Image 1 (tube, rainbow, N blue to C red):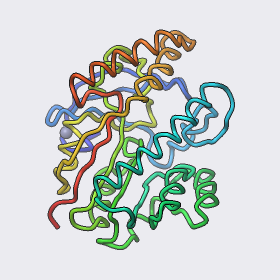
Image 2 (image 1 turned 30 degrees about the horizontal axis):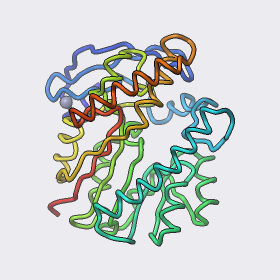
Image 3 (image 1 turned 90 degrees about the horizontal axis):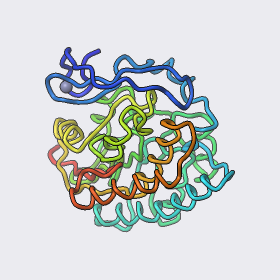
Length: 294
Ligand SMILES: [Zn+2]
């Protein structure tokens, strides 16, 4: 397949990674020979990938509160929702406005934004998550196809929290996000970062490769290249400290067959220390870009 960012047709083999969550199948990561973008080679297409999301372990789509691991996850999520609101307010320089959360999951972020006076719009492909989100925010949540029908020049902020790496139509989606954003408004994207120390430490067991659900494996350079092509300029790059621990816990499980909590905490801590010294190398990063020229 051609490079999803620059469309070049040649790529180097990079790493073989197993799908530990659902299928146990091997997938190949390749690196574009022209722009260096890292992507999953020939992943299942849009109509076939659904089965790879059929797993109880895929907790990002559920609100089940079983076990201490999920309890911590929920606690951190509630804390991070507040952080996200603060980030949106700071960079949009607004206390309310129109916000789209693309890939809103079960809608907890949008719900919080709505409570804080924002006009919210949600898009979510997973039918059961979409239904839950819709109930939570008491308004309709749309399928991804609806992006094309959204009004141009309408949104003050668009957010994608660990979503862009799952999106098949990368270029057309980013182009549409650009179209619906007002001039000088904000695009906020969080994705895992394979430049992180935990990625280097766990290699093929690094949980955030999450093949074949993750089609792209971003780093600050490749994200910049992609967004620059679509007329965005960089405002800020923020670390997501908790992700180093969360990803390390899962990676320990993939590597050793069980969750070695102490090892994971140590790895997460080292990774965060390295990222503190060298910005742009956190396990997951938040990219804050501005829609510049229209
Ligand atoms: Zn490329």
